[in-house]
Image (cartoon, rainbow, N blue to C red; front, side, top):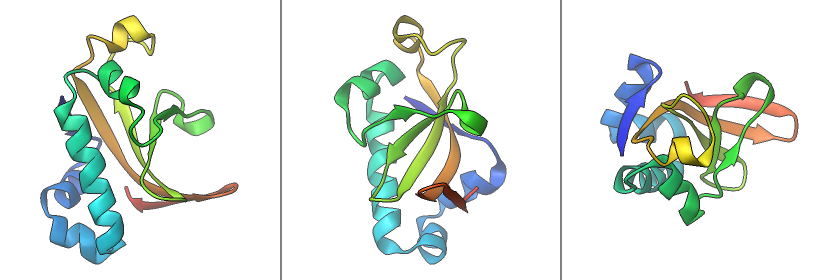
Length: 115
């Protein structure tokens, strides 16, 4: 699958893992890289969803249209499929996701770690 980014700043972190490591730590960077590699390996977003890796789930409220992919207990990678809808048949043809960032969510608190 192809990976795009919502901003150049986010892209910088994903292209420089040492910079990411300084920002969010080694363990979380390792988890981000693992999910990133899994997304890249999937042919389409629907195929990735069907693996269940990272417990991908649709988000709502201000993040409607995005998916959260678990990195650890409270951190998740936020991505949006580059598609005209979120139906499985549409996502089966979706070969690109856009990374919004990495978020820490504790209950109702949401803090962007990379955004």
